[in-house]
Image 1 (cartoon, rainbow, N blue to C red):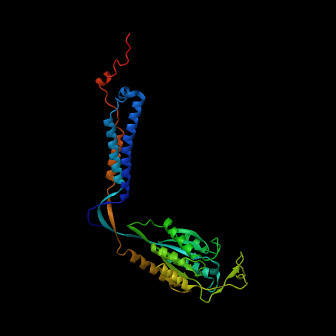
Image 2: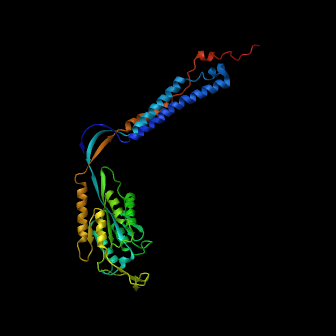
Length: 363
């Protein structure tokens, strides 16, 4: 921590708007006091009314109001968070938070790579966990809809269990909606990630493992929004440009045929690498093509390390020394003291004689 200079600063200057409450309290005090005096005079007359209030000390009553207002003033000053003295502090990195968006649409069942696109993706995602331990990772399955299977965690066994369970039944709706999945990922970061402030930040990354068959609009715009929120998007393509038919299987896993369109033609699915590359560019990340025996996983982990170092290498944050405790303590003491100030006059012998004989009846 590097000390710099002393300067008075307010962390929440808008709290001073509450000063209007003090002004309103003073106005209401005198308004109600006047109303009470007028009503008392009308009820008992101008001669009796002063005797009914002769035990009340208006000076003490106003003193109590003054102490209360002063106490509220100090409380408001505390709420405005006075800060005196500034210093520079290096931003602390809390590692990497990674959300894996796993495509479980029916096109991932194609077997242009063995044993299938989905099976290859599951194998490699498990390998990815082994080469980047200690980081917080979560898993989201997506197709036409999205489902958070595993929130951000450092438990590799739980992550591998959820990755192994990925199939086309992991979501309720088929199709491929990247926009919904990306917005779902942003929400998952906000709810389950490290709370980011001026001195604590994390490198947040989304890895999309898919064949790139996007059937919905808005994905590139969603990727740009995440990038603006300092969430980088990387994409990894599974499949081949030649493509293959989508095999259908029964509940026992036996092949029953190929998926057909409404006209009865066999549906062919091809990897859309160009779209995934555009998605990574919009998310300020990088695109990788997954192939058997490739080093794309190692390149991805290396890129994450470089990204983390670049983000926190020279980042500094200005820290201010909070001084709200002093005015808060003073305000509390003043408000407490006001409770012991009464508006009763101290009775003297002369005051007692004012009533002596007033209601005596002569015999």
